[in-house]
Image (cartoon, rainbow, N blue to C red; front, side, top):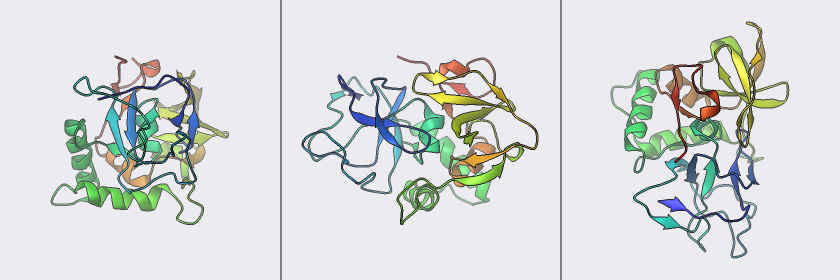
Length: 223
């Protein structure tokens, strides 16, 4: 599945959960249901279900309109670390192996006897990713030293990827140069705690190639 995007539609997701317009497509896509109207503009809603998934850009060479009327709104992410920070999880269809790996890491992190189902993870994540009243992203103060590589934080007012004891500021085109962090540094955690736990338990999110070669996490190559 390839979503066709020729203009800067409001469908690019940031690590802070905002959905904005930008010409860059990113390396992954996903959806939360239909968020747009007939004019291809987003309304007030930022989700239509608790199923927030993160998908590959290309699936069996199928090409689709990113905003078909009344059906779904294609959302685009720089990489999986961005999608996870915004509250999404791997799709169980087009990213089956990653979905199973994520669910298994979730199981280990929580000491469960069986892998959780998609709906169970979605319901749990929904309590951690948005405030029910303001409908804004939930963030939490945290000591950076307690976090695994691959999560997103906001440090000095700027969202970035935590990796190798440094933070790499996030941009629509990739990650900027690393900024060293003090061992006692604190920040706002953007990635939901349940996802952080899954990463700490072994899930390795796909990262933009701008951070290639400096870590043991997986790098997502553009097609």
